[in-house]
Each structure stands twice: as C-alpha cells, then as structure tokens.
Image 1: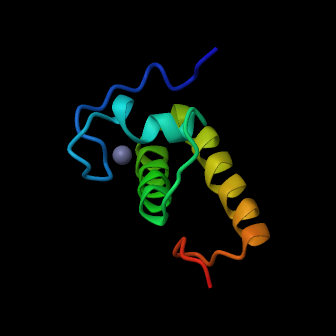
Image 2: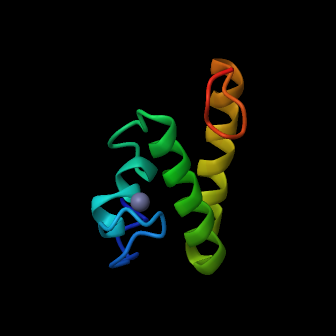
Length: 84
Ligand SMILES: [Zn+2]
C-alpha cells in the first residue's frame, strides 16, 4: 500500500530539478532518511507544499511534519533543521 503513488509531480516543489518521485517522495516514504539539514528542509518544504494543494494526502503530510518535529526535539535540532 502506497498512498503517495497517485502523486505525479514533474518538478519537485523543493526545486531540486528532479521529479517528486525521484526526490522528496523517497524521504516521505522513509526509503531514505533525510541525511543533511538541507535534505530535511527540502523534504519538509515539499510535504508542506504538496499537503496544502493535495487534500487527499493532506493528513499524510501533516503526520510527516509532526513526526519530524518529534524526532527533532530528541536530537536537539531547532526548527531550521540545524543542530544547536
Ligand atoms: Zn524534492
């Protein structure tokens, strides 16, 4: 079951130049953990951007953003994704 399969976006909202499928969707599906602060910020921005224009998947992205905030509190990163 993959609820993001129905989203096809030629240009990922994070401006990576890749399609969403080859970019932030991988983070959103937890195939890859976002490794750098930049990846984290990109994947979050995209979650926010797609969530706000795609009501069908809005809940999923809200969940993604909430999970991310929770793990952030544990690792001591602030809202920008950088370590203190
Ligand atoms: Zn992206």
